[in-house]
Image (cartoon, rainbow, N blue to C red):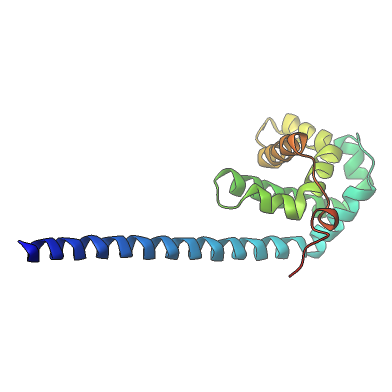
Length: 167
């Protein structure tokens, strides 16, 4: 009987050790995945088209119509479409839980909010003209999520939030 108890105890300990090991492996995989997504976000931010789009967003006035924007930007509108596509993809990835909204906010919150504000009319007209209310739906969703979060807790610039940080 004692042998059966020892064997049962060893089996239980083995299962417990396997569970702990599996948990640690999953945790390590999640960290690795998060690092990979961070690097992909960084690379998407470093394309010439995306950088041009950021400059456009900063310089363009609010409230322009689709036609006014297309006339004003000409061929540079392509850079904006690259940005819209990036934000569309990020919205989908956040919603599906593939990346955290915190990560997206760290990289893009300001430009997402500003771009939506300045190109909202363009996108709404695009939807109406194309009879397709889903054009850039995830870009809009992402903006709304960031805005909601910032309404509860305003964004604090990193240089202030982490001014006492030491490595």
